[in-house]
Length: 268
Image 1: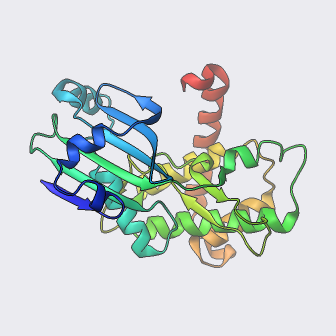
Image 2: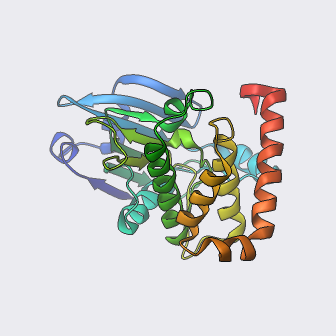
């Protein structure tokens, strides 16, 4: 069994079974599946997000593997990703409670509790009207470069997200948002993978997903080049020469995803 508790849970759950205590937390439920529950709870006047994993069963594991998908078996992936990103300097969630027990991956009981990031807005919501009403150029450049810096640092730290869309970048709104003073945090890491180095295949999948999610926000060629320079941290001339195949693949992949979205909408 693994267990990590910080305040206020260290005091609140002292002498209690943390796995029973976390199941008793009440609040707004965002996702309720057979093997996973996600909710927002308030404890001592502060907001927390709680993800509880109860095991998905061997049948679901096999089904995922046969369809070439890596199953999410518990809270460990998110816990490890948060730790690695924090060490690398990528702003993300703060975990205040984590537990895991049971050796059977199909029946393992685990949980993670993170501090709520508020007030914030995600970049998908922020950019909804950009195509017709562009933001201030300096603000747009600052956001692009920060997303690129965070994504590049994440990949260089050996983490790939697997849901790398602009909606998972939260902009903090507790103070006026300017190009010189903005703060982003990366969230929703339950599918993330952590290794010594990020395989090129998984890095590319993240980049394609990120580009796809930004196709409707009015990006110019200059915006794309600015992102590449900040992501790769190399001279643009070298990037365009050395990464030409990757850039062509990213455009094809993003276009393919976008076409599927147009056909199937939210079912994608």
